[in-house]
Image (cartoon, rainbow, N blue to C red; front, top):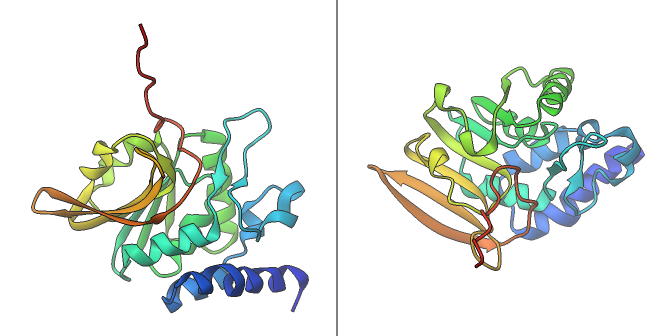
Length: 221
């Protein structure tokens, strides 16, 4: 086993499995997808550490791959089926979309940074993820032209209630992400049923806030 393969195995065995992630499809996907391929070469030694990994272009808006364990636990809560259409919001270089693509029927990923979206498209193609379409779009906008979706995954946190994304869920659909609308931030599962939305707190979690999903500062007299 190469050093990078050993690091990937250690990530799964040391971070993901001990956090009650029991869905074998997620474990297999994280073992199959080379996270280092989605990371700038200068940071590839950090690819399998338990951190939110900066994959930004020099001088660009900060963009991250969220912690592997946070991603894995949110995917497990979403209960993605093999026939589901999934939207990954704020995909950065595409790692989360690549993981989802291993067991979902169809995946669309959005990224607000057009250069990063192009990079994600190239990396996903190089890694055999032909069932992922990447589109340049603001995180809060989602992908209304191709909605509704069975599952929407936020690859980051939101400080606002993402109502436009809620509206892009199929009846019975699920949205999962880190909600920093209050403290402490909480990974949350939102489900749509007959036009109503239920919220279930999953676990305390931190993730960088997606661009455009920041809280609007309150006006101070």
